[in-house]
Length: 130
Length: 172
Image (cartoon, helix red, strand yellow):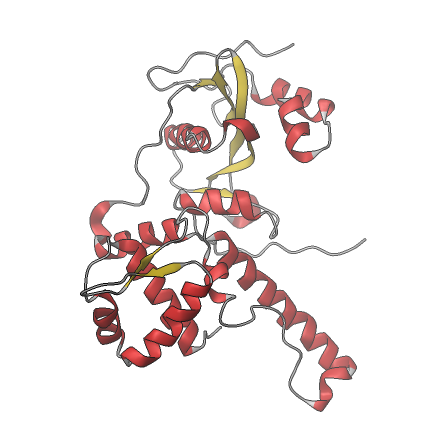
């Protein structure tokens, strides 16, 4: 996963992924999801998410905070399968809404989520320089 | 935000053409459906043809058909052929003032969001949304089951769906 992420983003983040695997990969983590797609014994994609309760004042909903499919394995439905599987997990956790957050210029992944039926949420992310 | 008439007509034309296999009289039907002259529509279609988004068909009942890649072509690609989707400076002498510049920042924010939205929605996604409008009771998800040939999903979460292999135990 570290290598796959680095291939796409250009930044290797071993500490981030080890920490995530420790927190999200544990069996029995009812509201945390750490899923990988395998093809011929190799990891070709992953999706990360969790259920957050009342964050930003919103009723409990599923959040996808990471998704990636190896460039050579794209356009084969792997991303769709990953998203569908995590959404099944969110439903089993009792929530009826899934959200994500993306950079405005990330057209590729924005288009993917749009193609899966996602629309603009009634929230506005804000930031400022510190 | 409001699109110009020609831009709206271009979007109507592309989506109508992409939604069905070419048939004679399609252009005339679109002109009739959207209340525009066939002459106005022809001008729009010529521009879309120059962009390779539609192509003319010849012979008896000739017309046009969708020629783009519906999974790649976005609304922004079509709109950009007819108008700019970029931040426009305030149309007044006050645009260079501190107030004008502050207002300009807000307008830029709005335009950048609009541009990102148009750029993220493909024609294929629009066709799903149109189908959903046509059959609003068909359910919340406009997409069908995904193709999963050659891949499997492993999960470390409980309650895995059938056919999904368990992941490795978490590192301690």
